[in-house]
Image (cartoon, rainbow, N blue to C red; front, side):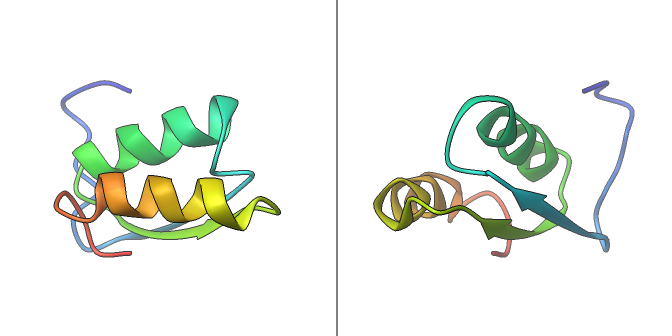
Length: 59
């Protein structure tokens, strides 16, 4: 994701967020300042991602 993009004040919903492309998108949008709504079937992996991103963006 291009650094010039600013997603502060926007909410992004990502399905399949705990792995692969979804995880990468979650990390990128968090770095861009978005509020995230993350969904995944793997609750444990999703919890680990939420812990990882907790300091970067509202979840």
